[in-house]
Image (cartoon, rainbow, N blue to C red; front, top):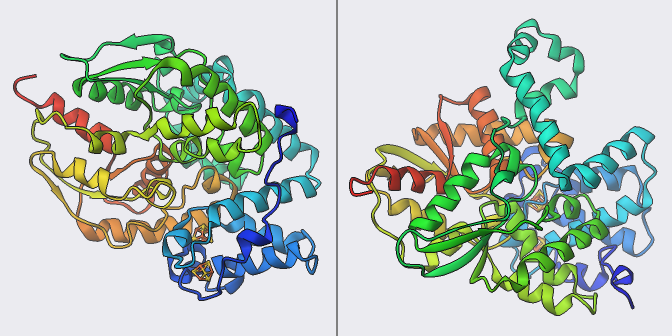
Length: 433
Ligand code: SF4
Ligand code: SF4
């Protein structure tokens, strides 16, 4: 069997579905159930529908597509489940099944073909998209569009404008192919993954990540042949495309002799750590993919596992932390970011109630299910405001965008930062730097 013929998990299996004992302990952890109170929009209800589809009692029809589509794939239910249901795996398989069953309009097919095809992989197309965004944001066009109310004419698209990231120039692509030495003694050799859109919208965060890694004795390589991790493809049910990207990243990074492959995006990290599973049935790549996944470390996880450089200066602020679903539920990493924040002098930490509940970002969820995403966000911002924090810290660029929109709509002027940006600021504030 060749690589392209690898067996794919293209529908939820009864083996996985049978793990659910219908206890309902996951219900309160589920943001869509909390919002709507409907069993069919709870993890247990979705599993019930998946079983009915698997046994042929229900078609892959509009109702099924709607309820599965409304799931944030946040995996909070997985953390709550006493029976070890792998809900993330189930929902991804259900989406692959839906993707293969539905007839999409030509426009939807075109948009998906462009976004999930060349756009996320092409540096020149990403730069072009960022340039257009930059012109819109900096030329006064955005101010005009917002003030004139013209955005309302675009309906859903107009509402999404608020979620658009800021284009950042120069982009991070200029660092591709380079290796930066450790500050002082070299303790580790690591590779940094730039992802896709983050290269043009979170370029400064990536640069801060390089700085903080170097401060901690890492030689940092940004290998040139790397590409998008495929997380968005997996979430959209496009497993074959994700597999193609995974093979390319493995070929580029695995044999570099790195101690770790680092990502600062929790969503990417979850998928990178699942390459082993994604390519499990590919005889040429299964072993390499499993080895690759073992090397992947979320940047918080990495720093929490090494002896941290304590030359941190003060960051006088009150901070709260919003768990990124793919870090806390997907990778089971709740403590590392908190441990890092606790190391920063003069940073007062206020824990937020329900910080483990999704903010509504969830990959492209806030774009395709904007109404639910905004309802979830509004609740989240009430919790944030209740802490009195002036900095909201999180560990995923997608969550940062969603929380920034939350601050704009319901907040009190809070700053939204990645854990790494707080550390970078602390190193910058150290007197002996
Ligand atoms: S993944 Fe999140 S939104 Fe989906 S069923 Fe589980 S808890 Fe609910
Ligand atoms: S907690 Fe687990 S076993 Fe119980 S209903 Fe939810 S998914 Fe099923």
